[in-house]
Image (cartoon, rainbow, N blue to C red):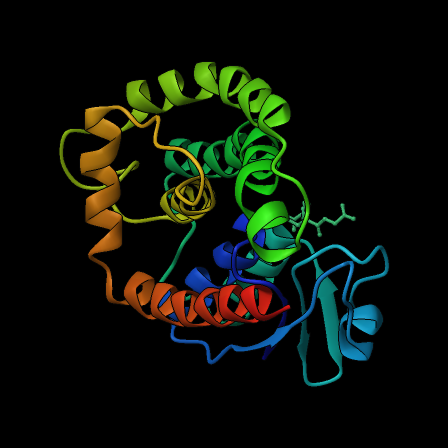
Length: 214
Ligand SMILES: N[C@@H](CCC(=O)N[C@@H](CS)C(=O)NCC(=O)O)C(=O)O
């Protein structure tokens, strides 16, 4: 499976992390809405990342892609069977994608991606606005993380999506509360996470070096 996107995106990281957890080989083809490749354009009608190509099949949207992988290769499961746990896993995915991530991407773009990778001026006013706006979500997170284990006991899509969004935030800001940090360190200990982040660090390091040369 080819994944089109750039690894600092929470949504791209979510797909790469989910694929690694399931043991689905995922080859990352670097593409962004501003710097698309032909494969990315063909797979993503609105130039949103991530998108995938698996054989002849193409799909965009991180949640749709995780559902596709789950149906194609059910084990290990990322969506619990228990009705309440399944509902919560989907809520945590939705909370992260639609409540947490928009302020995270805004802040990280203003403070890190724009100035460090794209040669744009640092936009501290926008960053501060996003930092303040995300506080209720950061508080909520501290109220849902358990003292032990993962969000729903067993590791699930909820852990993947929220940890993926927080990794984007970590480029620009550290507002996390203690229980959230402890839970996150358990997610970060997973081999699939280490694999995805090692590749991300390499790509970001190369992008930073290229940006300094220009
Ligand atoms: N619901 C989508 C959101 C994807 C998304 O917003 N991706 C951003 C990058 S973090 C993007 O491609 N933005 C391009 C644009 O808005 O034109 C998903 O889960 O994949």
